[in-house]
Length: 465
Image (cartoon, rainbow, N blue to C red; front, side, top):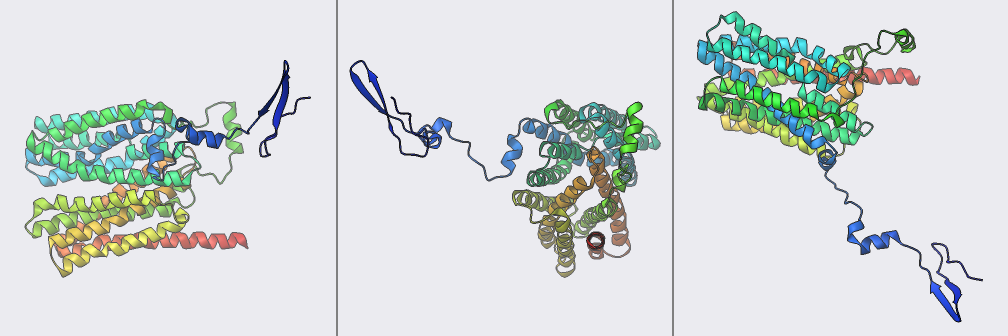
């Protein structure tokens, strides 16, 4: 009777059979897939990349929406500079140009959360494209009003209409959160990449806008920005496979009443009322004051040194430091939960923000200030990345775009307040004293984050008891 081949892991036994008048013995060897893999290079398992960014860029559909998002985000750093150059060159008033751009900033702060809420409810593609088209109509109206000498009030109305511009950074972060749901390490890397992209766009955008307006005609920066914005949004919106599903509210039906009754009373109706969100948004407001005051004071300092044209390059170093730090921060594994890291990041930012103050007061050198800003900027991206991670964690499900847009709104409001405060200190005191404003704003952000952490720790102790 023929013997059966031995099981895997045991010594192989021969298989005996008879063919005609011949005895045949065959030895079976267990099939070793791993060995065959080494013998056949075509069947090797894919190499595991240590670079965490490789996961982002190789995800199906990710490269396309990254490309579209970057194209659409570059104009975000172009529009304000283009508007100032265009209006000041035509009307001869920087005060008017500043007032118009400030009006657009305020309008954006009011409208952006509502636009984000629509994005969450109906989907990115259905809202982002028409919202962008409406905003571009406002830009075109501004160009026409400036070119044909329309009354000043029309400039305010036209630029305010651009407030419907969707938050491209928020929508991109929402896609990453959807694609890597339940993977904190990947989301950390994605948020770091997005922050680096923000810094890159706001570093290159003003330079590109100034070049276009100077090399061609004053309206060139705005018009090219419009083309880039619409092109990028269309590419981004076309990537439906990576788009988060819309979270429609309860429809007016028989189910609405049942669902509303079944919903826990503690569930917030808005991200603003989510647990831990109010102090976090206040922290973003304070950090915005850091950025706004630093920009105004640095421009004034460079002007006082007789190098006003170098102010843009000096500020670009701060953004470059933040960009590099953001990419490095994303490549590292997060050390502990975001709630624990956030106060530490804000504390590091507060300490590093003293460097420009020391450089300005002790040396009075623009070159020393540039180096100080480069180092100080390295704390920006890690702080913003960790803060945005907390926003994602604390925002109710289905309201992610709205939650992140509220954080951006806080930043915009802080930038406006910081710019005004920094300008007042420079005008009434000195440019050196002006660098005390970002330090004070960073200290305020640290106080808010520390108070929030202490309150959460106290609540945990009460729950344990």
